[in-house]
Image 1 (tube, rainbow, N blue to C red):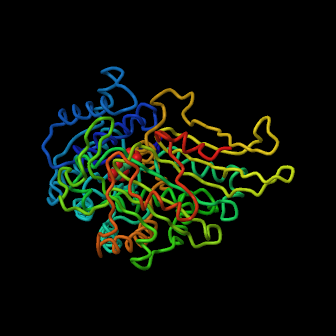
Image 2 (cartoon, rainbow, N blue to C red):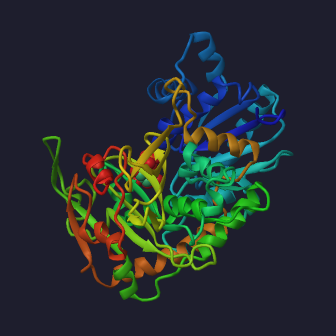
Length: 509
Ligand code: BG6
């Protein structure tokens, strides 16, 4: 349950896609599970005109289409919908914020709330600064309770623009009040990384350069850029996925154990490891360690898919990367010398996010005969099948000096009815309402991530000779696919990969 005093949510971007697909369904789930109680209210804010009835009708549609819980009966629905009102607002009009303050106060009275306010900005980041100032100047922050700001990415385009954005927000909100969403941090198995690492003596003592040969993080997507060409063509995979989601997963996998599992201590450890990432200092270093690709047309399941440059709102000369892969190194005692391979791309063959920890092999001989075991693997499957996979070696039955790998699978959702696992946005909204910022990114993490990413973007601006094209539905460009091989490793296949079993067992004895 959120605090006894409850809270008022002000949702900017109330008629947008994120609110419709993710945020309202998340709020509805929290309500159905009793985590919100009745002491909450929401003012939906956007430019477009809507009556409260129209807004509630749209709310209902979004819940029917996207929520985990279905609407059981009309009475219950009416009780829920009564907590929602709508206000059309022009972000540049201070008088509209004064009206917002009046609407908010009236709702607080109606639901017995005491002034706790959460402002969710599901709008373009260029507007964050203006909204913050007008909230303050319109008197919307003049209440006795807490005030929190939840914001979505992109948080800047590079370090200077992120600093500027942060400075604008800081004019009104302090760092403790800012909750920067990275929705990957709301995923069940991403949150599970700490438990897997720190609650198991089986793993943690081995979690270092003495035992780990390499780590691979893959986020492959089968979709293209869809309707988001305008945004994506400016952003590309580096800014869209790597600066945030991929580096956050890397940080959780590699950080030291925090002195306590409080949000600030966890984020202290994450920032240290992001800062320890070895920066690429020259364009040649970038070219040697980073691969970028862009999809061209391809055929998947008999369907012809367009090239990236033919997608709506994408320049037909675009050199934006839809694929990224890199070898990264971490310069600290624990990880010195261990390569981390990260890859992500659109229009790859499957949708999967997986982290593979490959351990070093042992020198074993049975009866004087050397055996060549395959490496132990720990695979953390983030999505879509949540779970853990462990590979280890046993003696091959009936032989004297042969070992063979066996694979253990743990399915995190086994036995749980479909739809019973909370969505990322549910967890994150609930955390923000409770004031727990553990799974939100702190400013120094964001800044350090940009510091690592900017030299890559800079090298890419110099010329686009290293951009490789790959057919939609293939596994991406040759440079990316060959990166681990340059060091004597290979990409381990991900779940759902067509030839996975053949690749997985290729070297079995
Ligand atoms: C978003 C990116 O942050 O994450 C999208 O902007 C991407 O381009 C999405 O498709 C992937 O999220 P998920 O949860 O579907 O893996």
